[in-house]
Length: 624
Image 1 (cartoon, helix red, strand yellow):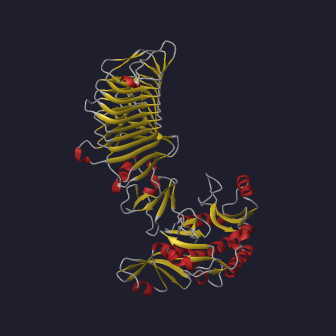
Image 2: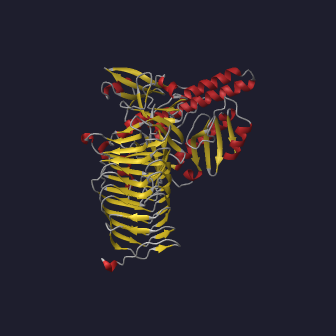
Image 3: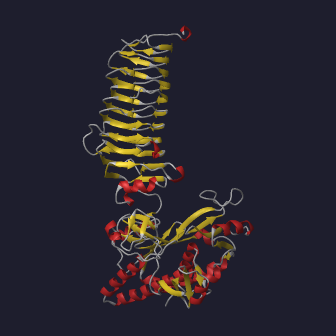
């Protein structure tokens, strides 16, 4: 027989009304008694999480067993065979994720346990007046059943003083799924294959379990879902039609059953019914591959799906995926390039909204990419690797660029992109290629990006400000950074560049640039440090390490004003500095000679340390 609560759960859990410990204890007692008389036939109980893992690996439960119970520290945990989260026992095969967790501490508090609110606003308004012995609150917030604790102060607290009521746990109840229906069918198929008396016993227990699942869903899940979706809960068809508009969906609970129903021109059209004996699962509907999902028609009440482990949400403007029924889907949570059919589609989608776009671990191959959009409202867009193994393997376009970011026209607008925590690698020969080309990009940032197999790592034209920090360049034919036109702000710090044919930074335009800071970089086996065809003001080359430069460290065709201070310089050839005005102090020079041309205005050249066979002119600061 099905589990019937007395009193009904809806009579115990009411909006804004404290729940007594005695009432909850009575309900748990009914669950305990039902478990003792019914569930033992098709449920396994393990004394610990480790015991469960060992037993399931060594002796997998029969297909008819879809629930196990583990005792984990002070908690009793009910787990489902096909539930992937939270806290699954396994990462492959049947995950055995958590369905229900009953914590000992939740039943050890005196008198009142928790208060329930239909939304966050109700909770904020009502909590200041609740008794001090109410220590948990449940509320529906944006499609999520949120459990808050009086003593928690982090994770989105409701208040800044007093009892903060931070989040203890979130349970997503925003969409229904048919996954458990499939699980029930598989379980039924397993039962039909059994011909022994044990099969009959399992079938009886299975029926009880499904009925109990349906009962719980009718009384808790359906109400929670409808509340989170803002649906009207009707006691009759006429009640629902009278209180909704044409096209609206309402939840009908009548005579022990429940159904999502649409008001269609004054007629009730049933969309989804909670059926006794059919378990309800709130997980997103799963698909093994993108092809499977694209060929499926998804029930309208399902708001989330999972494709190959990636979560999607229903979105009329979605670009990530389209199912056979014409429904569109967007990534749920932080989008990744794997959510989309191509990397370019992912970039177009996030570029119009702003925020993060993740590159998954491993190699993601793509043709040349165009980043032409700025995030909505001016939000910066961040292209970020999930781990150090995240790599974009790109075949360059006809212009030689792996990634083009910006606009070729003045009217193209500003662009704010950040690249971080990944490798950008050329998929073919390096000759004539550029890792990222910025044009009228306004601002751009590179952090912990590794450039491999290109001629030039980063190039910029008509770009206002660039930050290059903690990046790597390995075996580049050209320059690590190249400015084709003037630049107003450039910071290069803490980068590691090894084996480049050109310069750490080259400024090719005769139009003056300014505010160039090159600090803390390690450059080894290179043509030189900085080359400029035009003037540079506010130039700082500070705290860098340079080794085995085959040419001139500084090749300045016009006046560069600033400072060259506290660097370690190991040169391969004598160096003659021209057209520099400013300080050259506190540097360490090895193996070669540095001289100053008459075109220099050295304001101070003191405290430089030289090794055997090395020299650098000394110019006291008082001499100028």
